[in-house]
Amino acid sequence: MGLAGSPVTAGAAAALIAIAGAAAGLRLTLAPRWARRMVPFSAGLLSGLVLFGILPELAHKNGWTASAGFLTSGLVLLWAVGRWLYPVCPACSHTHDHSICPATLHGFALPLLVAAGIHAFLDGVGIAASAQPNAGALGGAVLVGVSLHKIPEGIALGVILHAALGSRAAACAWCAAIQALTPLGAAVESAVSAWLGLSGVSIALGLAAGSFLYLAYHAVHADWQRRGTLPVLLPALIGIAGAALLQRGLEAWLH
Image (cartoon, rainbow, N blue to C red; front, side, top):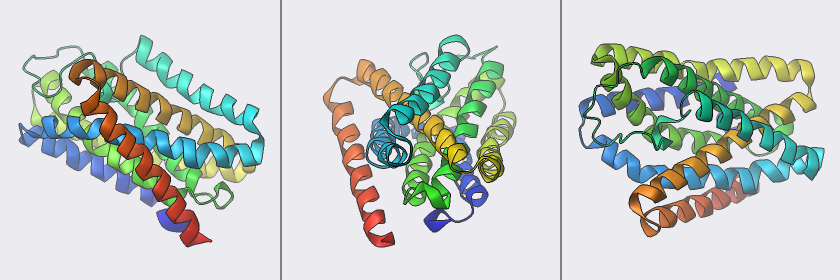
């Protein structure tokens, strides 16, 4: 299983990071502002992992056409959920200012829980698929990228749920329930990949990679509209470069 260890354990670790972020968002008024600065960096990191790690690995095994199809399917899936249900990533949403959250968001809880749950489940799928032996040297890189994105995601989720539910205890409990879908997604992917083999791993990894691209674009676009080009572009480019270096370093170390 490589650097990521057991996929379910890795998914649980990523979920715990998001839950810790949610707890911070519920207690620290400045945390959402700090988390907002991390969004473009984590978006760049996720997109860099796809471009320099996941996509070349998929193309090597399945060809560029099939790989592009897998990525497109994952991207369209999250776009459809975000378009017609609710933005799947609270940290990337452009529909609400998470840095202050003064309004009581009655009615927001249910669609947010469903959409964030889909996002968390796909995170687990990506972690597990990248940790399979035939997925190449992706496990550690994908786990790092997903885990870093879980920090602003968890903080924003905690703040929004607190505003929607009016209770810190209820918000924290629901955050934990949502993030529990990350190790569940890892467990489901591991079971399916054992049955489907290489094709199952490729499809799962492609869907997860497409979802990462959607999150990266959505985060950068929304933040660019709020803060301007330079404050967003620079950390995003640093994230992309960091992903390339991380992937190259892991490949060199493992081989």
